[in-house]
Amino acid sequence: MKNIGLIGCGNIAETYFRAQDYFNNINFIACADKFSEAAKKCADQYKIKSLTVDEILNDSDVDVILNLTIPQAHYEISKLALESGKHVYSEKPMSIKYEEAKELVDLANKNNLYIGNAPDTFLGGGGQVARQFVDRDNIGQVLTGNFIFAFPGVQEFHPNPDSWFQSGGGPVIDMGPYFFTTLVNLLGPAKNVRSRGKKFSNQRNYLVGPKKGQSFDVEISTSVMFDVEFENEAIVQGFISFDVQNHARNHMELYGTKGSIVVPDPNMFGGPVLLSRELGSEWQEISVEDKYLGKTNIVNHSGRSNEAPKQSNYRGVGLSEMIYSIENKKQHRCNGNLALHVLDIIESTIIASETKKEINLRSTCNQPIPLTEEEVKLLLKDK
Ligand SMILES: NC(=O)c1ccc[n+]([C@@H]2O[C@H](COP(=O)([O-])OP(=O)(O)OC[C@H]3O[C@@H](n4cnc5c(N)ncnc54)[C@H](O)[C@@H]3O)[C@@H](O)[C@H]2O)c1
Image (tube, rainbow, N blue to C red; front, side):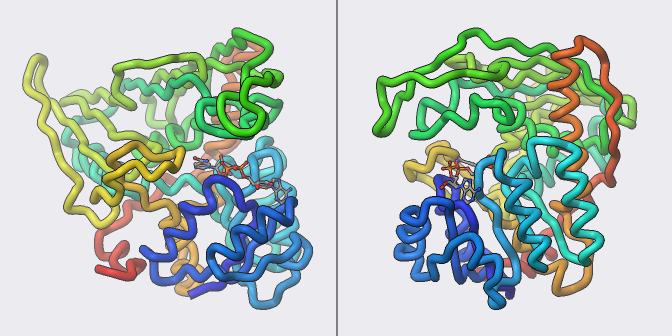
């Protein structure tokens, strides 16, 4: 069990507090935000201490800082945490700049501290069962594939969508971590990217909250198309967009020499995984409802922006597994090298779209080790 100090009491904080009910080693004791009102509200609701950022970093009872600030603040807050001698687990992406994230990984190593990063969704039943099909040669060698995340944009549900549309924001920074982490889990590290991005308008309107009806500036490409080549020679095409009203494509499909799979939503933990080994054959549907982290745990829409009506959401397992790893002196799955490589892919797609050139990645990482049901059980409160 470790004591957690949370910095960034916004939208996603509630989902992490829920993780305390699922996992046996997460204990929130304090929270902070640059707006003290946000921290006070959160502290009152969850009966923990409300502190300033400085106070939480210097609180000797806090073992791990959970960084739930906006992407543009991740580097600053994670760096302060590591300099204060705290382990840190951050929401995605690790930073908005590769060089900054690399500095964080180096700093954590130097200070003998753990640095962990979301997304942890690939540890869910959907991601792990898909991984088994790839590893056990059910579809042969994966040669190609594609994925899509496309919707009208964060302004649809978020009262403060501005940061998603400013430099350091954008659809690839926001959603790329889920898709690229899932691909690295399934295929291993990538080696180069090509990309094309476009900004279709300079302004958007707030659609919810107190600023509804007013407009804000758009600084970044809101639609990006790319292809990624992996070290194992697979090539995968992707499309991430805040410009699509609706679509009917699968989240991700991978095509191997012996068959194809449909990988479930990389933004969530559930399934099913679809498998087909023959042209024109029925798709076999493999449920993951019997997996600890695949079972549907949300049946009515909770109002949480990141959840569909029926979902499996076990966000926080990456934090829990990091705490377990700290206590057992092991390498954690959602580690700094994986997150750094994913950020390298993200930043390289942005550079590739600007320069119109193929970009070789600077980094590599180990493919995460599959997470077994026995290992998940060690983290759960109710088995
Ligand atoms: N909202 C979602 O559905 C969702 C889902 C998964 C992951 N995430 C990720 O979680 C992170 C937070 O997202 P959110 O939707 O909760 O954002 P948010 O804007 O609702 O909340 C962020 C909070 O961080 C605070 N903050 C910003 N900079 C700070 C600083 N320098 N010091 C202290 N506090 C600071 C803000 O005041 C705000 O309260 C992002 O990285 C996002 O990508 C969000």
